[in-house]
Amino acid sequence: MSQINYTLTNYAEHTEKFSHDMANRYLAGDAIRPHLVWENMQSQVVPTPYGFLVFDDTIVDKNFSHDIALVRRQYSGNAHGMIKGIGVVTCVYVNPETDQFWIIDYRIYDPAGDGQTKLDHVAEMLRNCIYQKELALWAVLMDTWYATKDLLLQIEGYGKIYYCPLKDNRLVDDSGGTQPYRRLDSLAWTTAEQQRGKIIEKGNPRLCRGDLKSLTNPGVM
Image: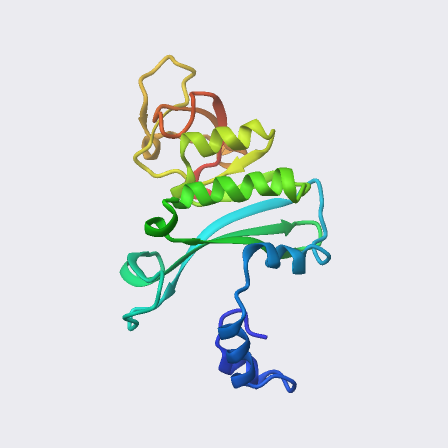
């Protein structure tokens, strides 16, 4: 199966048992709720203490749709602009030891219907992974969009490591308090820091409470 082409036509071309129409009828008549995703994936997941949780969001392009529920105008990174589509926030579990990954949860982004932001969805899925699924994991990986104070403190509260890129204009301090905060893209990097990262204090109150954290040089990621 293709990791790029997710269409029913492509699926039907690579399976003998299921036709395009059969798959289409199944998807049209069955709502695959988040809890069903976990019920079907639970027995397949190979947990490890070194596991990662990866949170990301995607837009199901519905630019030519008019009356489909949940379709709204929102920014798409793939399209590099605003499109009409359905927003989906996903949670993927990664086992780096076996080089495997599984989607274990998702949420539909529908702020008009449930009042939840994408950050709310990630926080909820993270709590579910810790307390309900009880998954062994070491770190949480996510995009810049999720690098907010509340979410990072939540991850720290669970005793987990987090990794997410920071925007160039974020104010940070790598001097231990001897110099003023400055933009991230103005930091100087030694050869050792480029390999192992450096300790910084994040000055933007939306990011963290001011704890020292390790930051990898964005130029060598």
